[in-house]
Image 1 (tube, rainbow, N blue to C red):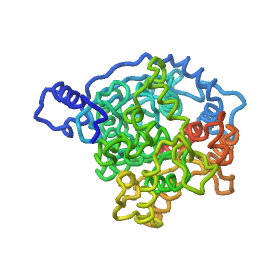
Image 2 (cartoon, rainbow, N blue to C red):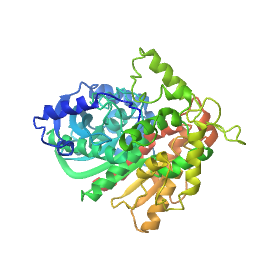
Image 3 (cartoon, helix red, strand yellow):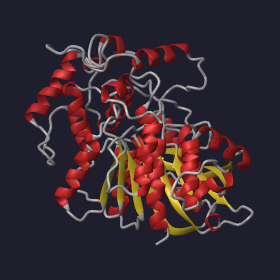
Image 4 (cartoon, rainbow, N blue to C red):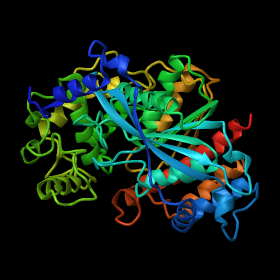
Length: 495
């Protein structure tokens, strides 16, 4: 088997030695706090001013919520939209990789700070939001850096509203000692989230009031849901969960893509998953050319996340990244023509696609029932990480997304909801389709979010959303799904 990464054994030894007791296992070290650093984030006044300027519709929505107004304000007042100041720290903690190996990771901890005049939200003890970020190819990703988009959303939508935010960067990012990222290996990602929460609680940075919320978007939507599943299995009291536009029905998602409906961004998402699954399960390929076309087989394995998008000095890696980004995902199978993401210069080779499709035909997903076995190694990896695995959410769960999302198809949400309803008619799971027409059954907040979806220009056809060079439906929608999460969390916070 081809080795993509080297040196991880040395990293494991270093982690264990640093802990001072090599007799312990990697699992026993999980959640150990390695250090805390206060971050020089923007001043509260600067952050609030910048957020109101850059996210005016969201700031108006926050002010509307905080003032219990029927309509958004004509003028946004920063102190009303973002009532709490925020203290930001970075913690480092021990966790595990996709193969169970010991490693480290970092997380942002955002704590509300009291202001004058006093706002009761800004005084502890606080509810805690455990937040999972979306896909990024940027190896240097750091949620304590407010240049990162989701960091600003976490700070404004949750921390400035009186919630402590624990936002892991994930193993493999920032200063983590893991030389790869276990992308969508959900057993590992859930452990990483839980370990960050454990370390944050041990840091002494905040006092919690016992209410715990989980949210995330895109990759983070699936990670948040897997974390909810595992917390509930462990008997942890979870107040609510709000995953957004995540690949919950992963096997069906993959089947739809390989059948002939590639997703926007698939040439970035797929290699990250395949790298991680190759390490976690060891059987996706013997050599990379088993899956990839020759022009990608030598450059794609181990590429992502492996670049710093803020420093474009590594020309070969950036060239490989840009070539990958603009490639087709799948090779053509006659009589296909004119399908987005299918054609020449494809990432996957014809044999890999044919083998996948053959197994999907022999071992299909049937309604809400996953196959008891699959033979194709990539489908096996997807099946292991499909969240329709027998679990039904106990805590109130809001799924947010849109049916024109070209990157993570809305089917993921509808199929998960259908699966849950087949298991339990009373399960507390609901879905918000931001691209649906407003109806009489919509709450005022849901109607406002749907109006904002239109105001942002996100209500494109699926094809136009896929091809647009100026509108990013999937990425922009994150702001609205996090707002939907806040509304849900506020309702339960007060109970």
